[in-house]
Image 1 (cartoon, rainbow, N blue to C red):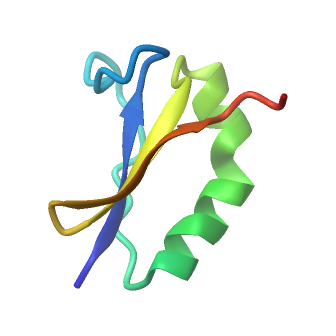
Image 2: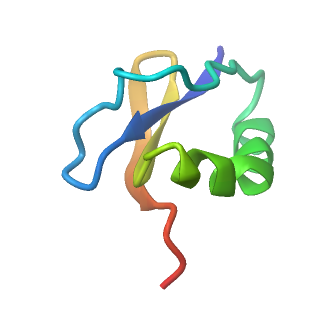
Length: 68
């Protein structure tokens, strides 16, 4: 099984119009750790929120990259 992030705009639409990292991870923990280290760069690139996918199954979505 592989895990990956889907990058989304503020309305939940997938961001596909710019080059963004397309990392694939062996575990959910690895994916979450990577996001913890890279969320600022993603936000600076125009990503507002993310969804975590295991293969094609959505584990969770709508995770904002903005600090509340």
